Image (cartoon, rainbow, N blue to C red; front, side, top):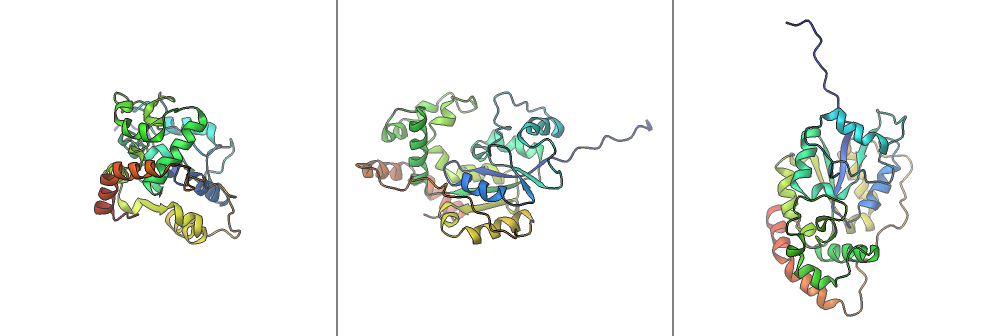
Length: 261
């Protein structure tokens, strides 16, 4: 025996994630959560720690927490529950593995949306930003070739981030990777339309899942749900094409996880 005290492993600062899915209502949910007095979320909602291009898989808990530190108030109360709402986290198995290594007890909240409407909403966002100038029908048909060679590329302008209109709607694949690392009791699945129509009942499930008491004041996020379901002139054929291209992925989600649309 050396007589030296054993090194005490640090407890992970981040205990829950709104880990996806992009364009499914993560912003609305994060705004609700941020109003709970027992919750702290990063400034700007998304910390993008685990998907940072310079993330080192050899980092321990303290080093990961050091990357999170600038995203929280300097005097943040460690007694409050710290979370992150970065929706790409559930999208890639590498990110799920990194998170499992950091905190095996991590609680995940995923909010889902009809894959066709999710794809339309993402395409609207990317074109508005100037990050894609292809029509959606073409981007969907050629997605596989646009992303080829970038499957593990987390750089800011990677096609993996910008042009995965179909892949991000493959909920069965993402849940397969998530449940391979985390027990199902640590994952809460929500629906975009339920949060929009009945936020009170959805939030009651969230507070229970996180082990938090219901807040005295009812959180009000404002209107942050986008207009992705509103019709675009002449866009019906594109939606039909997306439904066809996503049919197998939607069938897998139903057969394996009971997710129906």
